[in-house]
Length: 85
Image 1: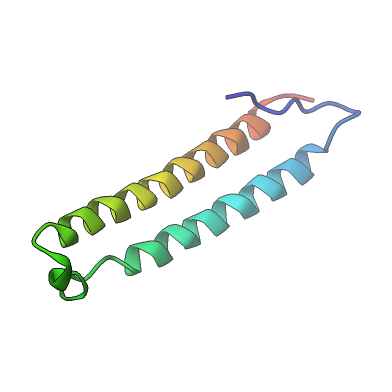
Image 2: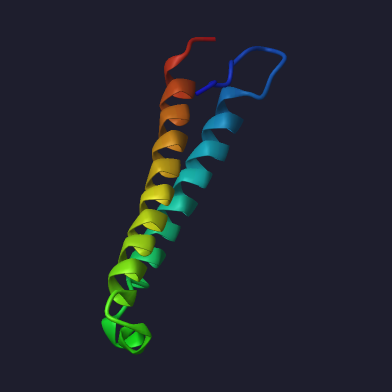
């Protein structure tokens, strides 16, 4: 992952911190909303025996993608907080 360089001619540390913290919180809220939308077997049984397990795996993959994205944003935020200027 390429991380931003905090320097005098770039975006300020405070602005970067705010941007990445805001993005991280928003993705965290998206994770919670998506977790609440977990598939219900009653919505899939008419599609066949495997439909619910497939939908569950796909849902889990979507949640994992968002969690990975939030972890990336948090790593960037930690980096911005740790570098000196």
